[in-house]
Image 1 (cartoon, protein in one colour):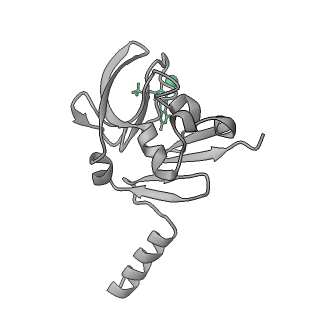
Image 2: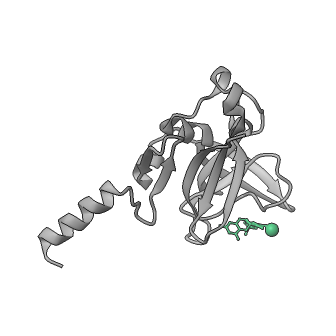
Image 3: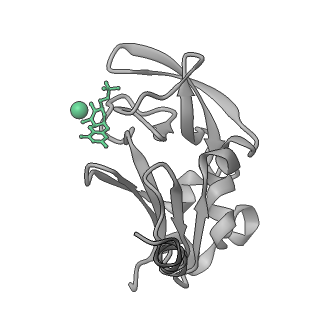
Length: 160
Ligand SMILES: Nc1nc2c(c(=O)[nH]1)N[C@H]1C(S)=C(S)[C@@H](COP(=O)(O)O)O[C@H]1N2
Ligand SMILES: [Mo]
């Protein structure tokens, strides 16, 4: 491809909100899109979370899910009330796997158990089979909701 057409393709990719494979795509209720590169995610405040799921204990490190959701306008704390209690968070993975959570259950001011988007486990970056990101939900006893290979997080409103 010539340089000019490459630049055009890149501009088109940006305009259409297309994320590179390792990028994280956030989608808000009004369709607003925020794409975070691995460097941008790495620069956000991280916490660690040790969980035991199906007998296996691991210490994950990552960004609290709420911090990502506010980037696309999600209400938190006292603002998370009324119709927002019906909003859902759809976490999607590279292999088509998906997990839906209630927005309210992701809020640390509503529920004490933490939910993070992990980029490291037991001191090492997540390998390709687990990363770039893994949803880690404190209190879950089964592994099903701990989505591996997460690439997108979308807020959705239920009509009724
Ligand atoms: N993207 C993706 N994440 C996934 C799955 C999957 O098929 N695809 N399976 C889930 C299930 S059912 C389990 S039990 C755990 C297994 O995670 P582990 O390999 O760390 O034990 O991953 C969960 N996350
Ligand atoms: Mo599972």
